[in-house]
Image (tube, rainbow, N blue to C red; front, side, top):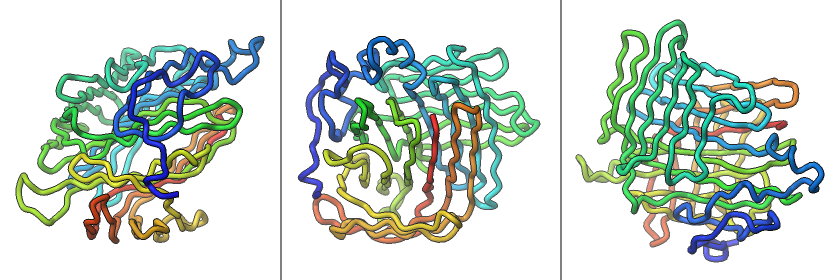
Length: 354
């Protein structure tokens, strides 16, 4: 498959038809499909009331600064909800994470689409709000006991309409599906405070990313995802270009499109197949990502491993998320070849039973 052979979605439509089947599979530069999850029909009619326990929805945000990675997530996994926040010191590799598991139907609000509305959770102690604004996104977080210290953050993402996204619609057998929007390299401003330590986020040096996912997976699922957002050194000052990487594989029918893209200055450059080579017995060894058509050849060298495990009997999840540096070359749609050297990002392997 070449990028030209992948199906690009270019018109607005409902995600699902009245019979629960996808309107179309493929990829897009913007979230054009209305996420009408109420039309899902993957169980026979007598058991359709159980579907709500199998639908998964999440909003994941990350911010890469010169010295820190900060991330917040709200997720409704059907059987339960989760709110979590973590931060990684990119100089020392030290990280801390707090997770809150929430009974089903309690307090988590996630909007229908990624283009409007507010995601929020508030249990009287922990408060998280992700709002779509005219200028982009606003994140507001209060977590009273983050490693024994209060955490608070106010962050704005500057997301102009012309900034493109990596959007995929992937069929999964049994009338299941995955609808996903990822955005890389969004200038982020604001602040993070943990106890007495305050980190200022400045748009000229801090970049945000979003992973917005909605769908219904098979009960046992697996995927690999690699992402990075950073700056190219080929220009000085405010004019320097941004570069993002979004790569992945692992589930569903990707014959219509993969999620593999390079993002330069907010413009998506579509890739086809990318092959991953890594050692899942030792995730800290270098990873390789190579496109058979020669458009991408990257080595990812981890320097810290984040492990997140969930065991709620019905739901289990294990994530090995490696943070490290990318090095190699990519080729854009217009033929320009870009050398990547030391780009901070992550790569993860995720196994779930949900």
